[in-house]
Image (cartoon, rainbow, N blue to C red; front, side, top):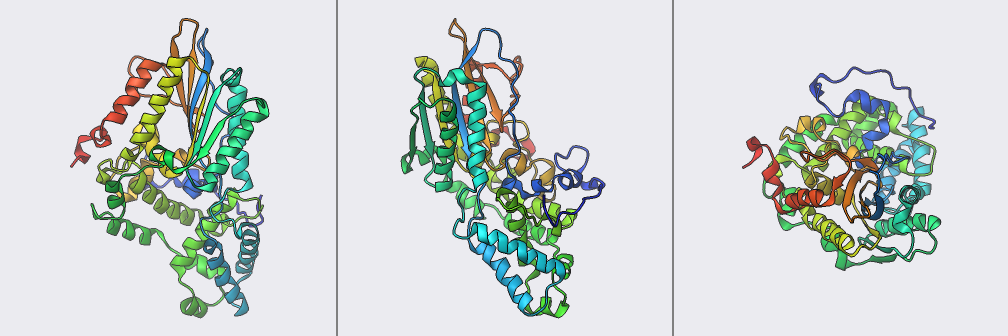
Length: 435
């Protein structure tokens, strides 16, 4: 794809990761786009579907989707790097690689200027494709006179994701009439957080930040990169903040996969550099959104309203016999705690050691761009209802004794989920981590 792409050699797995590690340097080197974490472009192109038990037909889907691929949050995320490189070029301080990077930055800026935080064209395509697979795999849900509601947060990229998803459904079922809304009234469950979690994340309840800051500094090693971009040590010393520039380039590099340009910057980093920067980003996201033990569950508990909404809304469809869909659209900071609260395998884990977070939890596995949770409901002629859940279109194996994944009787799955919603998430932590 990309003009600067290097061939990554086979790399020995880091000893520190251990045999139980979910993610290793080797794995990330084979697919460096994963080092973008929650910037990883949605990787699924075909959903996995175990045959439905005989006699059951789908009638309802409950959906929560993160917005699709987007541009960086601020125009200054592009401008800062470009200004730095242009000034160096004027001073004749760029290496040939530095000049190539400046060219890529100019292309990225030409595409991204004035679009900060908005969906990229890829983001639209992702949601349309997810919806089309849903319509193709479960057409019975959308036949007749389905009742379909679609709700998004007030952020435009979420509303646009909703519009694109609905357009994907209507490509197959043009007569459906989804009720769409993006307003404050739905934020209480679509994008909710409690003050106690704000205080923890602001480092007011626990002194986690000094340890994280030390880890970030240890993982940020920009000297080689700066020497590769600039031809003068004196220029670097006088005009460049190496740590800041490395991180600024990282953000652009990991987000280019979400844009239309065919250029890339991941290969200006060594595999180890990219892996270590991702580990820092991954650690921050785990601490602020998932099952980090020192938080005592306050971030995971932010998903309680959302999980209760999923349960109660499903109950209404099950009781009424109505077919249709409940479609919700929000952010990575919502689907991450939801997945952890639901105890979906691979979406939670426990360690207080910041250096080992990547061995128990990975952001890109849970919340790539356009991440989604779907619960599909099926009914037989007797009125029995079963359900299966899918995270990023992969079937979920819940830890429910006596039942085989992916299909569970709805009363059983409902009781399991309601218990999780009603119980402080710290209660599910290993005893040694509870305060």
